[in-house]
Image 1 (cartoon, rainbow, N blue to C red):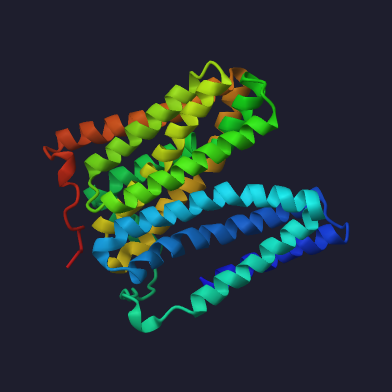
Image 2 (image 1 turned 30 degrees about the vertical axis):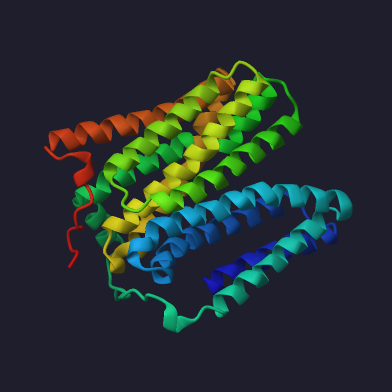
Length: 334
């Protein structure tokens, strides 16, 4: 994780330098964006796999919820601070401050007291380990359905930036300020929802995950029907709280049903399911916005969540298992 932070800092420094020296081009931005995407693909699974080492296993759901809170807080404060800094000193300074922020990450990682961690047993690297991870997830009933559903949701429902930018600009014709206010509202409610969830999410089950799908799907469905800006802002309150709810339940449930030695590979598959399918979904969302409206694109995201909830429920009934039973020890758990 220290190496990941250093790599991200170098990427941000490169963008700051290119901007400061007036050598930045769209191709540099494309290239550095690709590098940042690769860094994030390592960072997200590493972060989720590291959480079990920070807290006892019983506290993992709360830790995941609090992690969602800090992410939401970053979404709330980050753009506002960046806008002020941009107006004051310009883009190069913004990128330079971003690069320096990774120094804080490195210092924080180095300051951890190793003796107080809850270390996991690292699995030996073997040939065919990736195939083995896929095989394990596919053979495990408690993983297969949820990971597939998460990938489906990531493809259609996780393009929030496209959803709300196109909705405010092309449907409500309300300008860029309305988008910034909407993002602040959903980030604020996400922080509040995450704090509440961290106190009450102690034993997530498949039923809880299905409930999270229904809640977020309903929030997106109502957003797609919003007739005016005031209603849209009210929907943002629902969206912010249900987004952190879905994310926390998804990650904490996967952590709960996965043996400690397999958490890294399972969380990697979960990240691939979300981040890996989102670019494909962005093309579909853009196409739906072009041939129809942003309402249709948001409705498709809502449908992906509700369909996932329905399929998981039907699948559980066909197996003769209640949803709450999908928390049994995984296949190779000791």
